[in-house]
Length: 366
Image 1 (cartoon, rainbow, N blue to C red):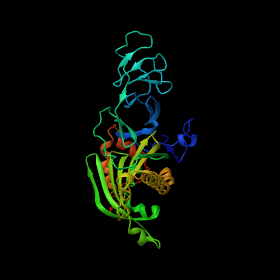
Image 2 (cartoon, rainbow, N blue to C red):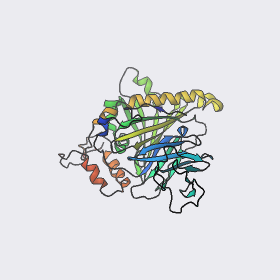
Image 3 (cartoon, rainbow, N blue to C red):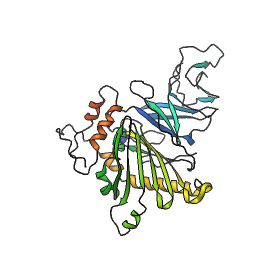
Image 4 (cartoon, rainbow, N blue to C red):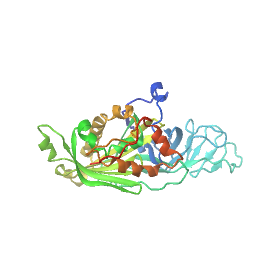
C-alpha cells in the first residue's frame, strides 16, 4: 500500500531544506511510542529506514509477517542495514559480510560459515503494529515499554486509510491543541460543547466534545447532525478518536501520532476508518465506508493546515497569560511532565521559550 504524503514541506531524498535544517530545537524528546511507517509500506521481506529523534531506525517484516525494529548499524563492522540489508526468513542479513541476526538481535550466521561471534549482537527496539501503523518504543534512559497502546477491534470498519505530513513543530504542542479551546472559533470556525470534561489518568488523558459551526445561515441545520468526538491520548504524541454522527448512522475512527524526526521537525501520521450502519451488515465496511474515511481524512487535513504556519513560527510560552475560555492548558502541561525522563528535560523546554518572559500566574482556564 502506498501512503499518501501531503507534506507541508517536502523532505525528499536529499534531506531537509537548508533553511529548515538550521531551525533551533523546539524542546527535549519525550519517552513513548512513536509510529515510523504505515503497515502497508512494510510488505513481507521489505526493509525500511526511518528517522526517529535524529537517529536512523531500520524496520523489516519477516517471512511470517512479524514487524521488527533495530538500530541501523551492524555490530560486526558498522554497515547500515537499511542500505542493502535483506530479510532471510525471520532474520535480517547485513549487506557487508552477510551476518544474519535473529528477532532478538542474536547473530545466528556469518557469511562464510564460521561460528557467529557471541558479542556481535544487534540492538533491537520494541515495536507494535496497531490500526495500520508501526510504532517503536523510545525511552531516554533505555527502559522497556512503560505502557501498551490501546488496541481497538477493526471488526465492522473499513480498512485504515493512512496519510502523513511533514511539519516544523514539536509533539507536545500539537497534542496541546486538543485542550486549547480558545483557538477553535478563530482558527477553525467551530464551537465546542464539552460532553466529558478533560481527564488525566496515568499515561492517558481524554475528553469528549460535540462540535457546531460557529456561525452561518446553515449553522442550525448543520448543528442537528453535529458530530460527537471522543479523544484519548496516550503519552506525548499518540492518540485516537471515536467520531459518531448518529443521524447519518455513521461512525468514524482515527489513530493519530506525532513522531519527532529531529529536534525541530515531526511527521504527523493518521489512519482513518469508517462504518456506515445504514448500509447493513455487509455494506457497513465496504466501499462507501472507505470513501467516507478518505473524505474525513482530507477534511481533517484541509482544516488542520490552518494551524501549520502558526505552529512553524510559534515560540513556546513558558508562562502563558491565560484567559477564561482557554481550556485546561496548565493541567495538560503538568500531566505531560511525566514523559520527560532525560536529565535537564524541563530546563531544555524552558530554554526554547523567550528568555525575556517574566514569571506569570497560571490564570483562569475556563
